[in-house]
Every structure is written in structure tokens, then in C-alpha cells.
Image (tube, rainbow, N blue to C red):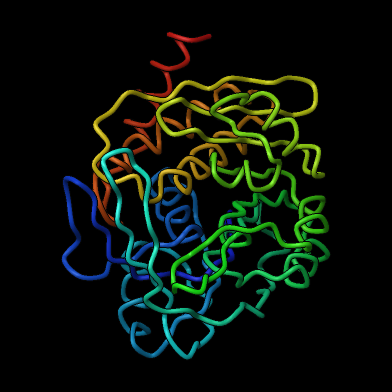
Length: 302
């Protein structure tokens, strides 16, 4: 049985950082990266998304190799970005391709233990998320990054808050946003006040809100507590997918024990710390190493 089913278009990205550059385009995407990390933590996953004929064969081959069950709708082209990071970790995103919105909701969503909604660029509509919600009792974990993106006049990605977000948020059990996304949604800069930013995110309607703040860690709010989560110190070579794999680690631990949000957050931080030490989908995440790093964070900060 598939434990986690994720909705979000895969992308093939070109990534350039001060220390590394991909050789052409590599498999990525919010839901894709979450599935990759969850699989390495021992969870069975499925991915629902659209791919064009340009990458269709490679995508099928990639998912089979990584043990992810694919549910693929054909698109006019495969999505992708050229990501260029500066020395501070800020980035620009130039669009290389855009796939159409997802319409498929596989029957197995009804038996999944959890659902991830992780769009890249406006492919998971309010109607789709509402349909998912009506077909499953499982918690929905939302990464809102793709809901908050649109293509600007210069062809680059810009952020905005769509009116539909107010209706989407209450359909979700957990919303995890990075610092830019949290500020777009709440108007509060998490660097200045992570507690308020996370509380405001939860007040959009979800049960649990998470705001990740890169090297400054993350903050979790469940309505009763505001919990500070430390980052795991590491040498970050490529931050692409850090939030995606944080979500994967958090979800993995949350399914095991939903009452221990501190450990779940530390598991997210530990998982992301391994991912950003490498570039591309083959980061050597293992359950043993994630558990080792999680234990260190818990012991040092509890």
C-alpha cells in the first residue's frame, strides 16, 4: 500500500550555486523531492503530476529507479527552472518550461496515510485540493510555494498571495512555508519575529503551521505551543529542495508520533541537512543518518 501520495508537477531544473553547477537539467520539484526523501526513510510513495513528451520517458525511468509510483498526465511541455543562487543564498528563477494544472486524483488517495500537496507553479487548484479533501480522511500537508508564484513581465518568477489561498488553507492539516512565503502570506518577516509569523500562518486555518528560516532553524505552532527547532549545522552546497525534504522528514516522524512535534521538526531539519550537502536527486539520505542527526538535535536542545 502507498503510504504517502503527493500532488505536484515534477520539474527538470538547471541549478547554479557559488560552489556547484548541474550538468544540464536534473529531476526536482517540491512533491518529487519529498517523495525521494520519504522513500529513503522507508515510506512508500506515489507522485501525481504532468510531464511533457520531452522528458516523459526519462521521468518514467527515474521514478521506477527511485521506487516512486507514478501517476502521470501528459503536458505540452515539462516544467523547469534555471535557479541561480548568490553567496547569501538568495536566488533568481527563470522559467524553462511550464506544465498544465493537474486534474487526476487517483483512487488510492482514499487509503493513503498522508497527502502532500506541493505545487511548483499554479498546478494544484482550489478545486483539486477540495476534491482530494473529500476523498480522504488523511492529513494534507501543504507546501504553498507554487501557489504563491506567477511569471512576471520579465519572465522570472515573482511572489503574490492569490485570493484562493484563504479557502485552501483550512483544507490542510499542516502548512509549511519558508521565510519568503510566510512573509507573503502573513505580512510578518520571520527573521524578525518567527513566533508571530508562524502563529499568523496557523490562523489562516490549518492545524499546524511551520515556518523554515534556513540556517536560523524553523518554528512550529499548533495553537497550544510555539516550538523553536534548531537547524543542523552543515556545509550547504545547494539549498534547492531544503524545504521539500524538511517536509518529508517532518511527515515521516509525525506519522510515527503526532504528539512529538519537536522531534518531528528535528527530523525535518536532519533530513534537509543531508539533502543540501549534495545537488540533484541522489543525495544519500538514509534512515540511520537521519536518526543520528535527529538524536543530536534533540539531546542538545530539549
